[in-house]
Image 1 (cartoon, rainbow, N blue to C red):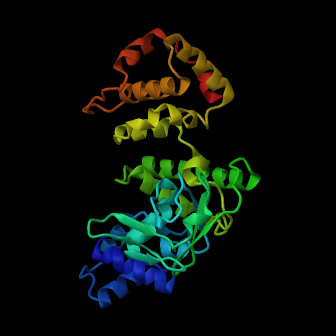
Image 2 (cartoon, rainbow, N blue to C red; image 1 turned 60 degrees about the vertical axis):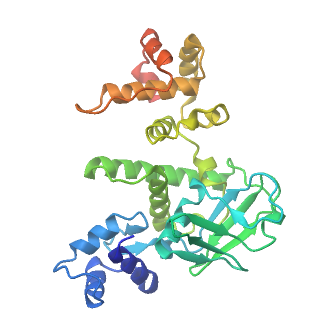
Image 3 (tube, helix red, strand yellow; image 1 turned 45 degrees about the vertical axis):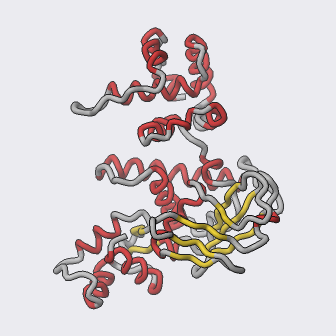
Length: 318
């Protein structure tokens, strides 16, 4: 993180939401920037996913937005006697916070920090993981000064009305983020960083959205076909492994899925695999000139896509 961005995060964490001009004046007085306008401060915050601009124009940061928010992590295997957690995308909003602060204490003993190589080390208090059964959930809550880690006594159903409400809000903010990206151009964030920004955007609208535990974000949202293609281009080809294929089609309407399943049967492949191949083929068919072609993982199956009847527009509308 740049020196200006670090100052902005610290300033907003202590003083709360503020106009960019106020932040710039404070940064200038502290000798953090010598720029004659606030553009350097604005750019520093726009480049970081942990800053959010409020509807009234003021800026705020993850350190403020995430207060009271709870995120869950599913523990794999028997972790009795262990004190270390290996986070994934389900904890991305908190991971962004750790990157901003450098080190975050955990209540009861423990810390989350960055090592000299920029890798995260999540250490929870002794005995915390002992209370989490195999496949159980560990909840992390940001209090504003530290993290609180606790085992959940019972699981959280992803189809519970509360979980479905959270999912709907996050999907709506994701669509808004995609519209903004198309309107203002591409921003160099990874898929995980994008998820962190979407969660922060949702929390600015509904501060109590994550005040109660919900399933881990990756389980709650699943992986849509378009996201699966994006992951392929990021080099995460194992998203197509058999145990993950069931998550690919969560958001596809049933009539469309039935049609895709029939088309996939012609090729003797899984419907989700066919969907990813179809989307990848369509992406490069409509790609701008000069785009480097992508070699599909299953080139022999890609060649046979031309033999499959095309889908009607009304079916896609679902």
